[in-house]
Length: 248
Length: 248
DNA sequence: TCGTTGATGTAAACTTTTTTACATTCAAAC
DNA sequence: GTTTGAATGTAAAAAAGTTTACATCAACGA
Image (tube, rainbow over all chains, first blue to last red; front, side, top):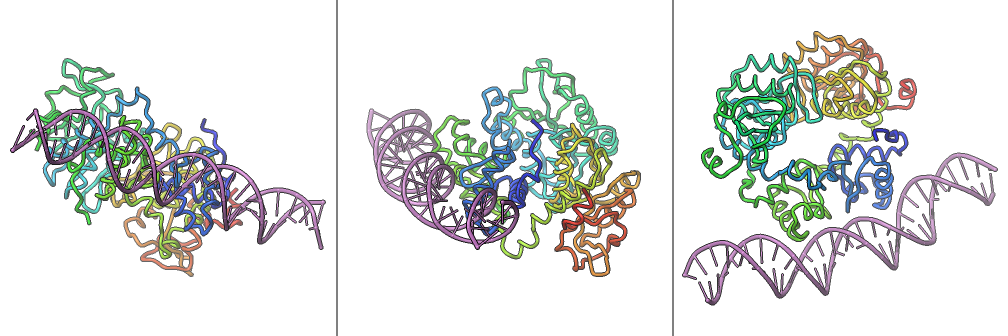
């Protein structure tokens, strides 16, 4: 599956279209035609060639990055896993718990990333995170943003390992926003990734208050190993109205 | 310009559409309708509301992230600045200069990011970079990817400062892929950003061989301060045929 | 209970995009 | 000096997406 045609199989203009698509996520045929000074039909042919080779995905009026918009067509199994609405609600409630100007640790994960975007709209945070995606959610001209760690662990942009731990241990922060894979019946907050668990534990020690971001689907399940107990968190944010109100 | 309507102004489904769009870059109306179990018309209305509020951009058949696909409509001033084709040619030639399995430093910049994507298609590099975007271009399951630094400096995902310098000084690498803003008539390789210049200098010391990635438009211009002389580079890659051949 | 409001679905008219087929150009090959 | 083929442009037909207008339904307050 990883064997793709070399870029040299395409014309310079086609390679350029591919690069533009990758940089922008989506490009319109009209704008490409204008940009290259050729007809829309020619661009269309280029895009057809690139799509046939699997390098990008065609849409009405343009083309997008492969495997992204397509991913949206979730089968029903993934649906529960995604639950974007729940995550969004949790992320916004969590952001509401954090006062302006606080120093924060942000964990790895999509829910925390959403919280990062919400926080970015407000002024002046000091942010430390081992998630490159969370870091990129902030405008560094308006916030003090720091990435903690060296070794990139996954496509999620997470950093784990010794450097991450050491750097975190030297910090003293107001809040840690922590995600998890599961919360079992006994109140154990758990995750599947041991190296990430280690980071979460150290972050919680470094922070005065820890907030748990967990969608309702996480509760009543189990995972590989324990991060902490529910009672170790200042607040558990599952997106229910009560907690959102309590947060505000 | 930064004042936008709060997310609470939108319905839960609209917020979810927004989140999905931001995560995917582009979403189709058809897939959203299927996903939410409502008619395409309803999704269309949601998207119109979100587009009116400036939260996303409408396209035929879907919606995309604001300010991205739009950015593609370059005015003629930006055109030269972008010169994607040139950058792509330079990036591919640069990637061809690096042998499989080498240890690399990757600089900040779009040209270097393109080189990173080209390198990712090949097996087993040891990569060090102060650009989060370059780091994210690699699949960490197939490469050893490391980000050097802590403080995020700009929306380009660059890391600069003391931590970056210290970590780089301890490294010994095969190749450094360096970008620049200008190369003047005397062969001075220059840049506008002093903190990035400092990082580039240290990286070149840490690497056995330094490759300069510079599109033809960079030559004959000047910038704020000097990174090094052209002669300090093992190879200067401007995308011309000669050098590409020499590289292969 | 009644009427209003807001959200949604449906369908026909309209617009845009895509497809298909064919003409043109230009350069390499014979 | 044709011939050939690849790349491109043009135009009409087909397909897809959008708009507009109207019907439905449930929630809410008088």
